[in-house]
Amino acid sequence: MALDAFDRDLIAATQGGLPLVARPYEAVGAMLGVSGEQVRKRLGEMLGEGLVRRIGAVPNHYKLGFVANGMSVWDVDDALVDALGEQVGALEGVSHCYRRPRHLPSWPYNLFAMLHGRSRAEVEQQAEHIAAMLGEACGARDILYSTAILKKTGLRLTAKG
Amino acid sequence: MLSLDDVRLMTRLHGGLPLTDRPFADVAAEMGWQEDSVIERLHHLLAHGVLTRFGPLFQIERGGGQFVLAAMAVPETRFDEVAAQVNALPEVAHNYRREHALNMWFVVAAASPARAEAAIHHIGCISGLPVFAFPKEREYFVELKLPLTVPQEGRHGA
Image (tube, rainbow over all chains, first blue to last red; front, side, top):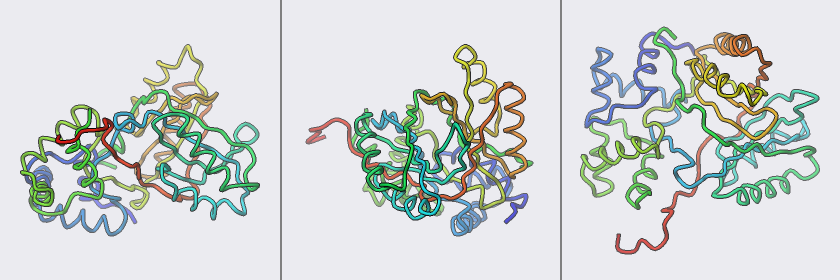
């Protein structure tokens, strides 16, 4: 589904955040030369289409006390990875879970699960839980801890798309 | 330090802001607050970096775009320089330093797969380093479901 000019303008106007005013959709509409009603209608459709996941707050894990953030990566049997990925993604503490390509020989991992804990011990405990869940379907594994957020702005499309 | 009210508000807003004319007033009414208090507290949480953003979260792939995770092994002596080069691109949505030979992990977000590929190619050219792309092949889960709690225990009577 391709974005039209209004969609692109709406994304460009809101991807950095909604104005924190009493009538935020009206304010966005004023920027785009449309009514607040039109903004709400299109955002509602976008929610329905899945083009908008939700309209809400993006927290900084570190500031919430989740100071240990590890990208756990697993080399899982291709025939089983989809079924197991669904189970891993459903675990508490896993915020994102994806299947991604391997880059052999240096990168044998195809399942990525982001883990968040108040300590590395907590993250490692979660990883042990996942390891038990994956069992013999999983070979090599690793956890890549983040040590600095270098950038976290989110999507920034230009109005031209 | 987060207050109980901060946690309540973030928990409420995680589920989504209503698409109504005065959404903060509606959230306030649900919570027994004033509209102004909701807006002020959101300002505060954003200003203090507890929230990095507040608004629609676009799943741009549903609109023909693409997010691509990519990584590089950056020599320590060049780390800051390369981080600045990478971060300068508007297509780079997030960038994290990680403990691994591949020590820089970033997400490119673009309006089309071709633009994402071009951005990754560009990063390889300006940095002179190989870029490993990890486009997602399948998404199993994307939602923060952290148990939000007040970090300080024993805030009775707060």
